[in-house]
Length: 358
Ligand SMILES: CCCCCCCCCCC/C=C/C(=O)SCCNC(=O)CCNC(=O)[C@H](O)C(C)(C)COP(=O)(O)OP(=O)(O)OC[C@H]1O[C@@H](n2cnc3c(N)ncnc32)[C@H](O)[C@@H]1OP(=O)(O)O
Image (cartoon, rainbow, N blue to C red):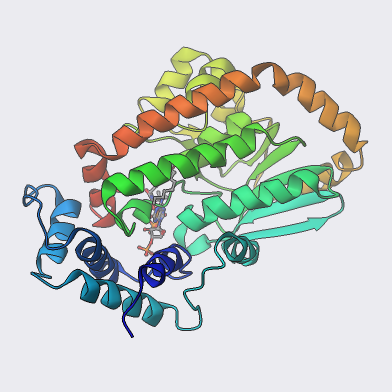
C-alpha cells in the first residue's frame, strides 16, 4: 500500500521523537527524501564549496534524480519506521509527545524533601542540550510550577554542568536550514519563557563547567551555587551567534556593561570565583564538599513557608517580566538570522568536523 500524506506527516513527527541519533548519513537521506517528496527533483543551484552543510544536503537531494514524489514519500516513511520499529507512526500527536518527554532519560526529574530536582543527564556529551531536552525541560518546569515542592533545582550529571546547545541540533534537522532555524527560534522562545514565568524559587547547582545557554539562563535563576571547579563561558562570537535567554539585558544589569561585554562579545571564560565577584553566582564551594553543603542548605530552604517564598519572588521579578519577554522575543529573532549566517554555519561545521574546541 502506498504511503498517504497523513503517513508522511506522522513519519515526520516520528523523526522528531527519535531517541537515538541515526547518524549523518541517515539524516541526509531523510532530508533528500523529504525534499523530493515535497518539492520534486532538486531545483536549487549547487551551494559553494565552503558551504559544507548545504552542499552535502544538495548532493543527497540531487542524487535522487527524477524519483517520483510518491515513491520518495513511501521511501521516507519506510526509512523512518526502520529507525523506530516499535513506534508506529501514530496520529495521537501531542499527548504522546508529552508522555515521552516525561520518560526521557536525558532529563531526570525527581521530587523529594520539598525540592524538585531537574538533572541534565547526558554526561557523555557534557550534558549538551538536544532538541528533545529543551522540550523536556519546558514540560518539567510546567509540572514543577504546580507540584508540591517548595523550590526547583537544576544540576548536571558527571563532570560538566552543561555544554550548552547541542551543536548538532541544526546539522541533524530533517528539513532545510531555514526550517530548522524557524523551529529553533520558536522552541528557544518558549523554553526561555518557561524560566521567565517560573513562579517558585529556581536554584542552579553548578557542579562543573557551564557553556552558552547554560550560562546565560543563570541570569533568570533566583540563586546560583557553584563548585570551585565550575567555569562560565559564552563563546557566541566564536560561534557566529548572539546572546540568548535575556542575557543581553540581565548580564549588563548584574555585572555592568563592561564586564558583560567581555563575556557576551569576547567570550571571556570566568572561573567560579570571578563569576561570584561579578554577581552571577551567589556562592562558591570547594568541590570536595560542594554536594553535601549545597544540598543540606537547600533542604533547609525548602522547609520555609512556600507561599511566602512565591510571593517574595513575584515582588522581585514581576516588575520586569514584560521587559524580559520583549528581550527574549528580540534575541530569538536575531538568533534565527544568525543561525543562517555563513559565520555560524562554518563554526558549527568546524565543531562537527572536530577542527575547533572552544
Ligand atoms: C531544529 C532545531 C532545534 C534547535 C533547538 C533550539 C536551539 C536553541 C539554541 C540556543 C542557543 C544556544 C547557544 C549555545 O549554547 S552556544 C554554546 C554551544 N556549546 C559549545 O560551543 C560547546 C562545544 N563543546 C566544546 O567545545 C567541548 O566539547 C567542551 C569544551 C564542552 C568539552 O571538551 P572536552 O575535550 O572535555 O570533551 P569533548 O569535546 O571530547 O566532549 C565529549 C563529547 O561531548 C560532545 N559535546 C560536548 N559539547 C557538545 C555540544 N555543545 N554539542 C554537541 N556535542 C557536544 C563532544 O562532541 C564529544 O562527543 P564525542 O565523544 O561523540 O566526540
